[in-house]
Length: 198
Image 1 (cartoon, rainbow, N blue to C red):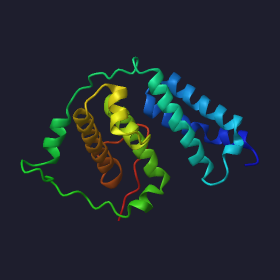
Image 2 (image 1 turned 45 degrees about the horizontal axis):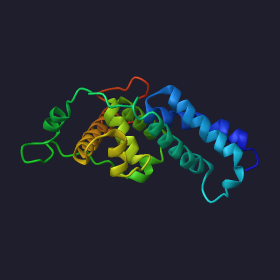
Image 3 (image 1 turned 90 degrees about the vertical axis):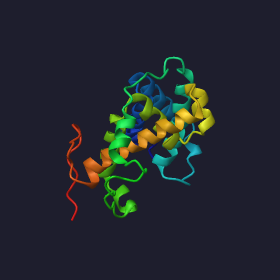
Image 4 (image 1 turned 45 degrees about the vertical axis):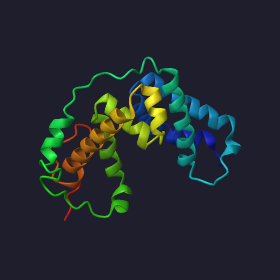
C-alpha cells in the first residue's frame, strides 16, 4: 500500500456507515471507526496484501465494534420495540406454515450482490429494522459472533435470540421483496427505486 492515509480516507464513510448500523449510536460508531483507522496507521505492515484493503479494514472494525458493545453493554440495554413479528408471520404464512404466495424468483444471487444499488437497498432495509432486531441481526450475520457471546452481551436466552433473528430475516425478506425483487410498493425514503427486471 503506497498511501495508507488516502486509502483510509476513501473507505472511512463505508466503515462509518456499517458501524452506525451496528451500534445505532453515532458517537460510539465514530469511536470504533477512529480506533480502526488508528490501528491501521500504527501497523500498516499488518496488511500483507493477502486480502483486499477494505476486507482488512473491516476485519479490524469488527473487533472495534465488539469492543464498543462490551464497553457500553449497560447503555445498550435492549428496548422493547413494538412486536409485530407475529402479524408479519400471519401475513406471509398459512396455518400449515407454507408461504401464502410463492416467493418470487430472485435470479442469480451472486450477480445481484455485485450490484452497488442492491447493497444500498439492503443497507436501507437493515436500517429500517427495529433497534433490537437490527442489532442482533448485524451481530450475528455481519460481525459473525457466536450465539453464546450475543446472548451474554445482550442478556437474552438462545430461544429469544433465534426468535429475534427469525423476525429480522422475515422483515428483511419483505423489505427486499418490495424494494428490489418486485414492484417497489413501499419506497424507501433515501433509496431510489430499483431498476425493473424483465
